[in-house]
Length: 127
Image (cartoon, rainbow, N blue to C red):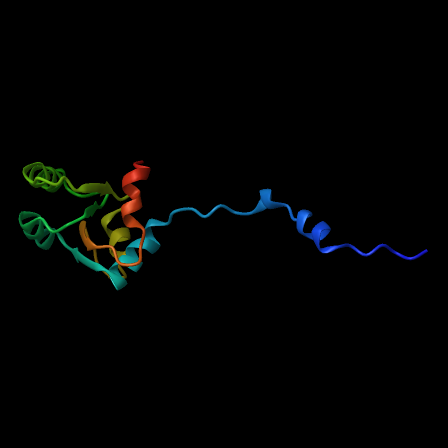
């Protein structure tokens, strides 16, 4: 008896799509992409200076950022007309420095232009 050949439709429907991995948002990768393709300022003094001029779209601060510095960021943010989004990074300042491919601690990052990254989509996700 001759075997029945599978048609193209039968092979397409037999693929199990439930096992397909869902793409998760990786902040470290997006910070690297923004650093390379966009305009990013890092460091406490530069970010505070930039907040006075108000060019940022978003701020990322480390988890172990000093409370005084965090309150300064919130104070300057309250003085501006356009409130910017402040994201608290899950890792320490060492981890934030490594996310920027720097061998030192970074407590704050100011995003002026996100480049090819999806960092501004964190506004809608709000942890």
